[in-house]
Structure formats: structure tokens, C-alpha cells
Length: 208
Ligand SMILES: [Zn+2]
Image 1: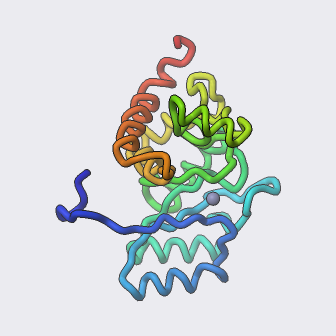
Image 2: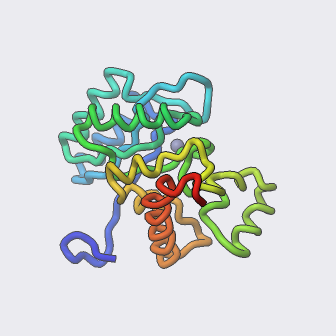
Image 3: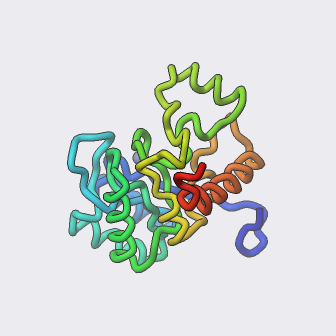
């Protein structure tokens, strides 16, 4: 893997916007900025319409949005953390990505799945294969076995939308979902698979 400036390694932080409000994370980012870090702040473009997993402020909160824009202007990357804190249908995801682009002037270049969102890409058992997948499903009592098991039939799929905007979104996604079961090499394999899926799955819909 090539890093900017031919560095041998990189260090960065992709935060998790769960529970985040201006009051509880503002000071953290002031600290990071003082230290010279320009890390990634994840966001939810849309406010949730139902209770869900770890709600926090979103881009629909004006004071929060103003703060996010200032972070961006300081050089922090703004990342996508799904449309909101609960599962979103495809149309809502499309709206969230469009809003992100409108607010921040460009599509997200990085994203992270938000725990139990049903539209997560390569989540749950889909991150693994072979024996590791079987072991994972047994250990989790198959609670996450249905995450993206068949892309062509997944109604919440939005990968091809991401691909039109920035395909490297998947690379970030993969690196974030690395677990101790996985290696960097397997991450590369997953990236290739994901890119193949993204570029081919929806075009092949109905034919596979
Ligand atoms: Zn989260």
C-alpha cells in the first residue's frame, strides 16, 4: 500500500458520531486541532425519524452543521456514517448522500457503517468467508447473517450510488471493518470484491 509522501505508515482517526453533540465532542476537536491533527469527523446528514442506536446531532442541526463546516475548513475530513442512526431505505440514503454533497461541496470520500443499520455494506457475516464466516454466525447466533448476503436482491443497496460518486469509499469502509480475524491482505481482497460488486451488481440486477 502506498502512503502519501512515501511514508512507511500513517496514523489517523475516523470517529464514530454516535451520541456526538457539540457539547461533548467540541473540546476533543479543539484538542486535536491544537496538536496539528486533521482527522476524520463522521456525520449523519439526516436526523432520525425513529428511536435508534446511539442518536446524536446531525447535519440537520444548524449549530452542529456550522461547526462541521468549520472543521472542514480547518482541514478535517468529513466522513459519512450512513444517513442517520437507524436503518434507512434506499431513497433516504440517496437523499442523505445528495445532502452531504450539497452541504460539504463534494461527495463523501470515506464512510463507516453504523452498527446495526440494515443498509450497511459488507457488514456482519458478509465480511468473512469460509470457516471464519461459519464460526462468526455460530458465535453471533446468526443475528448478522443476513447483512448483504445477496447484493442483487438487497433493496437497500446503495453501492452503485457511492461508486458514481467516489469508489474509494469502499476502501475506507473495508479498512474500518477490519477485525482481528482479518489481515491487511484480506482487506485488499475485500476491496477488490467490493469494487467488482459495486461496478457490476446493479447493472446485473435481474440477470444474476
Ligand atoms: Zn456508529
